[in-house]
Image 1 (spheres, rainbow, N blue to C red):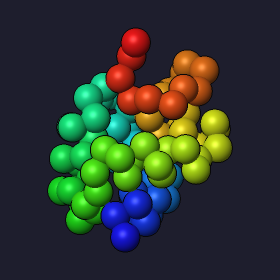
Image 2: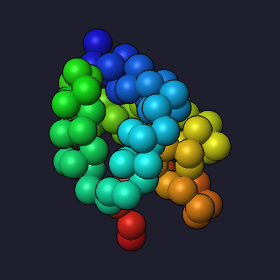
Image 3: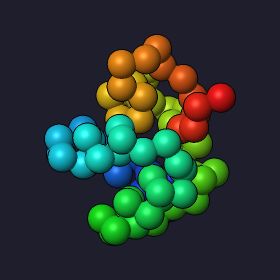
Image 4: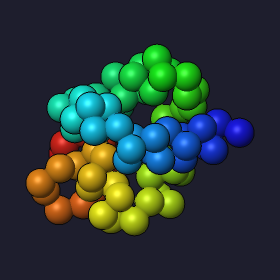
Length: 77
């Protein structure tokens, strides 16, 4: 169920430009989870990773990685 919450959260992010901008400004997965929880979406980092793996590169880049080629993690290497 929580992986579905993560997927629903990503869909809501696509429709909320303010939320999208807020998420683009962070680089900490825990902060990402806190923001999601504040919006009523509860999921774990493992659920987040699973949901990210189901996103297209374009969807992922538009939510968590603006202006840089898509990658499968929230924190820079």
